[in-house]
Amino acid sequence: MRRILSVVLIALLTMAPLSPAQSGVGSGQHKIQHILLISIDGMHAVDFLNCSRGTAGVNNGEPYCPNLAALANRGVDYLAASTSKPSDSFPGLMNIITGATPRTMGVYYDVAYDRSLDGPATTTGNGNPAAPCDATKPPTGYTTEYEEGIDFDQTLLNGGAPGASLTDGGIASIDTSKLDRDPKKGCAPVLPQDFVRTNTVFGIIHAAGGYTAWSDKHPAYSSVAGPGGKLDDFYSPEINSNVVPLPGVRTPAGASCATVRDPNADLTAWTNSFENIQCYDTLKVHAILNEIQGKNHLGTAKTKTPTIFGMNFQAVSVGQKLIENGVKGGYLDAAGTPGPSLFGEIQFVDQSIGEMTRKIHDRGLRESALIIITAKHGQSPVDPHAYDAVPGKTMNGLSPATLISNQLHAAMPPSEDPNGSGIGSTEDDVSLLWLTDPSYTDAAVTLLENNRAATGIGQIYYGPSLSLNYNTPGLPPKDPRTPDIIVTPNIGVTYTGSNKKLMEHGGFAHDDVNVMLLVSNPFLRPSIVSSPVETVQVAPTILQVLGLNPNALDGVRIEGTQALPDLQFRW
Image (cartoon, rainbow, N blue to C red; front, side, top):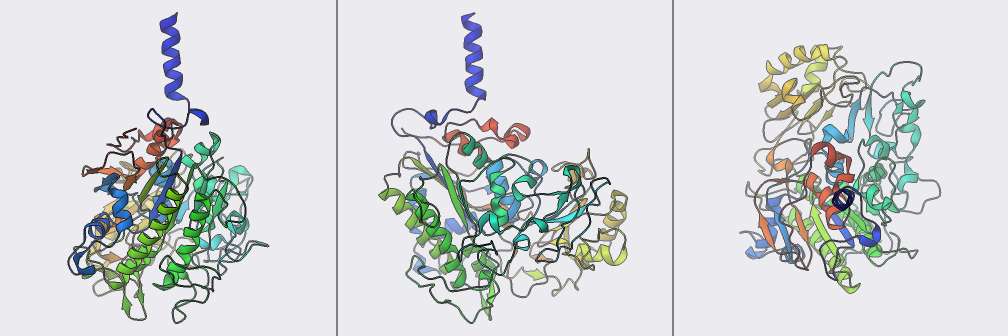
């Protein structure tokens, strides 16, 4: 009987989440009580290598991210980390916090498609048209949108939330009439957190009694709570709003944002300027500093230092991609040597993280806080000579979706058709193709194969090659969200047609997916891991170090996701 009871007890301890009082790892006095999770969007592994060690031609060859380098001196640096495929911000973030890939969590892009949903009641700010929903009829299938277009007013920094202060809209900024509707649930709008099929570390930690907070670029990123989950503190100033003065805001270098720093830029979005984006990101940096002090994100109320909290930086991504009034960001060569604009953005992010680590130290949290720094996505191509946007120097204006729409007129759903009146297809340096019916797949693939040169196609995934890594597309019991075809172009080819960018993300190329991944704490044994890992492994690692069960994550159980290797604490 004792042996049976012992086996049962061990099984329960292995499977059940631990109580908050037991939260922590290892033995002894010092345990992890706080997770600070940072995404430096676009930050490649080579960017961190160059800035932490120095590279010829930049800063006299000296390192230029001393705060990040200091974290690496007491942490584990994963050189071969890979983010989600597709490498968009939305799946990239959900990959990090669910322990699941798109096949399981069901998130492919911020603008994607779902064959089981009907359209929104109101046309979105980006033009996803209103469409009928009838709970008594089969769904029509519709483009899904989880970005600025679902805000009440995407031109406002607070997203147009009723009664909100200048920067503070959050979930209240989401106009539910602009969300796709689920006919199986009486045509109820599908909120961002409910669109995700799997639970998240935020939801699990909150349910275990932890305090959860997150800051990001759109109100739609309330998705981090996951289905049935909750965020105690969520901050989401709209990044694609009009640029406005920010009284009382100063960047870490002391630049004032009380007036618009770069008034000659296109002021319809913060991402249109190398300077203005720093003011925007500083809003979220201030939120983190307030939360470290045990306050809410605006610093107006006393709460508690979160168990898990964090933010994304957009500055490096802007520094990589933007051409502003003839001034180019990006890199000088294929070795990842940053140009002056990108160099400035990396320094800004490093200084911001320095402010966070100093505040953590001042609050006496240095030993109990685990800092994880990674990126939702990379950016391609690093080599500035490889960029070729459609319509570009070789592509003659054809993207895969445009080609199919032009020659197989009935193959594209109306809300996906690039020649239609809707928001259009999902194409960056990847092309995700949802067809009106699977019967069009073979004809569409043949058309693409016959026009490889005109469309810059690198690889086509469909049929078995698609179902290997994703669920088989179609209506239930098949997967209503899986694209029928995924096209990855030749390196450097993008389908945006933009002449204001130098890079893009979304695809499967090395530069798209090989991102920085650093885990730091004073009690970690410093090491460098060169074997391949994935950002999807961050989620079970977070729960493991907090003393919670990684198997509580749906993605971990379904996909067998492992925690990151070589995290050895010296308690």
